[in-house]
Length: 414
Image (cartoon, rainbow, N blue to C red):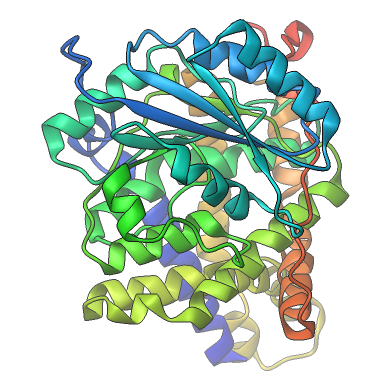
């Protein structure tokens, strides 16, 4: 029990330290931002937009992309041959913007996001391939900043920020939004600095020649973004991460706990697939250690999130020797520090996005910590079981546009 407590405490402390990466010094925080663009539009972009049963949100996303201030871009919408409703929305948008919007039909019998992206890759004409999701709210100035970032850094990949925004929808939505805030605002910058990065699923831009050399996406992987990041990292690609609250791509949280559970299961199972494939073993030792830690992290996090409170309860309620009872409280120290950090982070999140954080939101943060950890544990266990049993079908996340609603009662200007 003492050994388990020490291991859990170490994992929690390391994870917290890495999560705090961007806030360690003012210089570190400043370095996470996009540099001001110079007005030159030298690169051309092919923006891939896979959409499956997304007729409710697709038109809005296309219109947002069409408002880009960059001059050189095309939008390639990928729809399934068996999805006429989404296809109708896509073709209507293409008819209104000929030459700017192209619709590609995915005829794969097995449908998933990486197969859809690979279907569009032969049609790409731009210097850079960008990926967005069908519900994304994209800032008009984003491409100008990405263009400048590529040219001034010599990057092969530029990862922009993504933020779930409807924190007010439910207690679990708040926790989900904070996860994204810490991941894109801070943690991914550490990975880019260390030379190993599991890329985000959208607002990621890859030079077309680099992407084609890597043979695109793995059509069998449930975390195609992570897999691509690992493969490019193992080949020495230079990845730049930039985060600007005013420029992030805004998204919504899953609309039900069941949907969130399935989404997180898919991600975790994808991490297991990437771990098993072993591309990360090509990395130098330090990056290899970081890769193994990262790819197993969701499972360790899920285990520790449940085991720590239970261990503390056992230490309080069970008749244990004093030394062992005290040992059960060791992991509680970084866990308590993490809750304090999340509380401060929630305040910063509200400040960055001009959202009013009310007392009940802090209550959701505290009261929901253990239930959310339990949810992550269930998702991790479900991912292991699905991978063991050979079930690798893509469980689609439904989008309802919650991030597009201006819920003034919950999220007014601070």
